[in-house]
Image 1 (tube, helix red, strand yellow):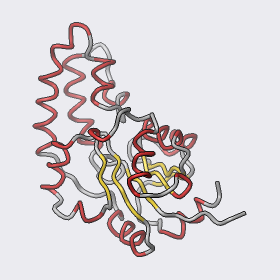
Image 2 (image 1 turned 180 degrees about the horizontal axis):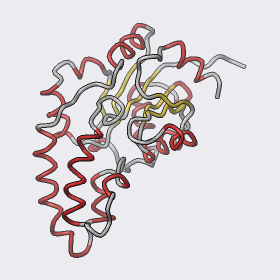
Image 3 (image 1 turned 135 degrees about the vertical axis):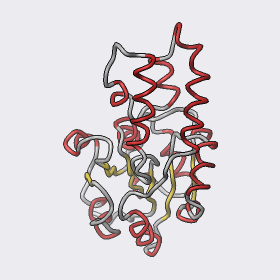
Image 4 (image 1 turned 135 degrees about the horizontal axis):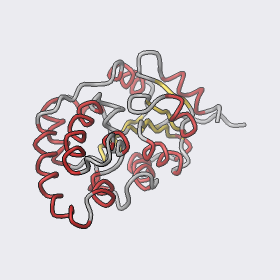
Length: 219
């Protein structure tokens, strides 16, 4: 059997590159308590959903008129968030680059959100060969569209890619794209994401290029 070559690492953003999920839990907790007090804990259920998916499911009918205000509040919140890297991320991605692996961000975040990221982390763009946002996709995760487009952008085959995700929708998207999937246990428990991923990690402290090559060739 031919050895698979690891050519591209495709990263979701929140909960994968940045340790931002606790901040989003605070924001959506406030929103959900205001508009859906009958559904305690809803902020945990909607993790990993796109804004469109949240609106379609929870802000339809009489609440549809509230979408503009929620969006305004979310935009303002994201402009003052902290975008700090998951532990070990920068060293790990430097290791990948040294071995010729291409890297891309594949996120459901929009361009205004990314502008906030760039202000907080001026060196962010230099870490990636491509950055794909919600404006680049026709269909949201869990559809594989975003990851297939990222592979095409980088000029690699799906068998040469590893997807890094934390949310159930994101993990399903990587699976649907028929790529190897590493699950970050930052948003959900490792045992809960295990059925949707080939490896589970809590951060990037103990992983490297060699480990990912072995993963790719074990599935």
